[in-house]
Amino acid sequence: MRRLNEDDIHERQPGTWNEIDGAELWHSADGTTWEVIVGEDGARYPSGFGQANIGLVSLAAAGGRLFLGTTNMAGGQLWASDDGVTWRCIVGPDAPMSGGFGSSETTSLFSLRAFNGSLCAGVRNGADGGAIWRLELEAFSER
Image 1 (cartoon, one colour):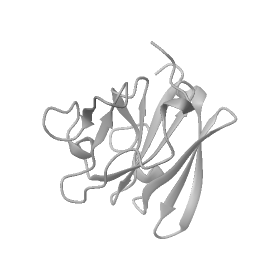
Image 2 (cartoon, one colour; image 1 turned 45 degrees about the vertical axis):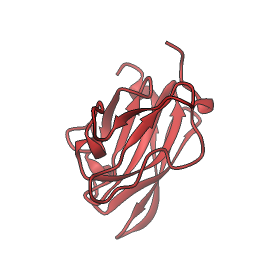
Image 3 (cartoon, rainbow, N blue to C red; image 1 turned 90 degrees about the vertical axis):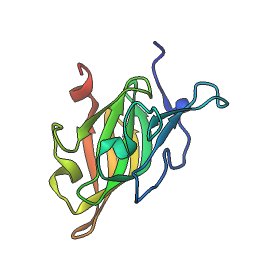
Image 4 (cartoon, rainbow, N blue to C red; image 1 turned 180 degrees about the vertical axis):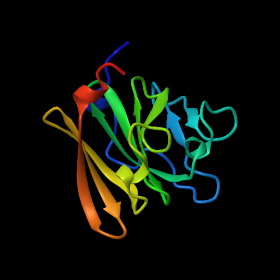
């Protein structure tokens, strides 16, 4: 399997925004043929990853993985993938860290960037304002 890098993503919202049914994520290996990964109609995951994720708003490649940030009014989530198709939640319900990095007021992970062996997440917190969280990529090397 080829390692993922910054050339695999584009600087724009990676998924859809849908406050009624939940966000969707689509994948294409060639830019012509598309497969729904998160959504309805035979997708691998239900809309919003089966949770109240209304927007898939940020995407970054770091450490050979893709990371996806969401907007969720109960606490934004962070998802990781080795191939852009199979995803696991690393910040959110039943994840190593609860949604919103422990605060339900942190509703959106608007910006993700790789930096110096870390993944930095720019977040919106309705009570405290914006913040930047840093996750060490080594923590994900064996997962």
